[in-house]
Length: 448
Image (tube, rainbow, N blue to C red; front, side, top):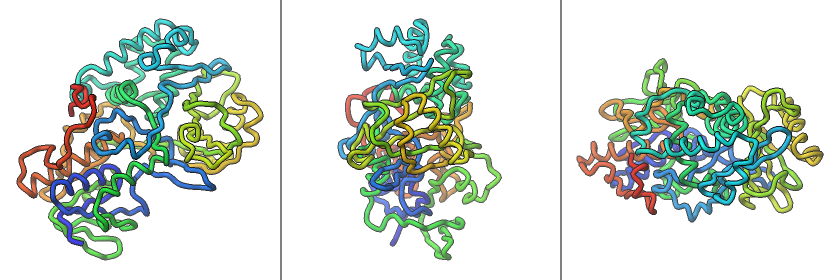
């Protein structure tokens, strides 16, 4: 196949880059070392169950996701805007009262935080929604936990809500992540739904890949090294193109660029372990995320950070008369059997003897589940992507991790290449992709 541009990596960034190139009138070829597109966004099927590889969700506010994805075809199933928190031996509901105003009295009485904490949420929300994304990433950066303490949140609120909820996003138990990244994620939670595609997270990259021409993606093709106009595959095959794009994880990108010692934007990764169980019935009803908000020293201790039942959101996640239970734990160096024993003991204290009948389906240990986002995190749209006359990068190597920033990075690289190869001067519109649809596209906070 003739190609104007070779894109190395079929994750979200690589697919977005290829689509942008195609819409610009260029012929892309995507080569992927794995047997499936998607990068980290993958799903597996086992015994009639649908297992996403790790705790992954789509924030529907993401401007780039609305730009690239057909939400109707994804058949998105939203979580409840809030969570169930296990604290003090009981389960308490925490709600986003801006989206569930009738829950305001319940929130004021909730023991998850103090009344003053609930009022401080007003200031936090206002601050996270102020300005556009460029202004957000220009703020002073420090650990998110420091920001929350500066705002006056109590230790009870930090331990029972912020740490279990947002550490499940960043895989940072102590919220040492960037306060800029925290504000970006908080904005996403405030302005949109947190949702799962009805048929699993893999539907997101599959939908992108389906828009590319047949034969445009070659799977199970690992690149050995780059040349000026060519890539040398491990098979010995040489592929030539006018431009090359590296859309791989950071360490692989540094290797291909010939600088394995180079420290990319993200110098470390955060790991997580996910356990999947088959149950006769779900331990909770409704589209809830359950958080472990028990303080150190509580009667019931254990490794669980969060628990959810994807089959409560979509019937496609489990066969008839069964429920899928997903348990998420920090770190990836656990012994699976020992971890299962500890998890069962903990959640049995929450849900009773029904846990004895859960059947383990799988354990996913993901040592590089997410690049660490330690401060300072730069504004991703300002990080250079062109590495030489013919080489570009996109994805996590020069960007912040999230579905939004992966798609943005790929689109930006594709538009830059179109301008370089075709001499276009129409900026981001070179890809033929207009502004995000819907009333949110007029919100200044979304300007990139």
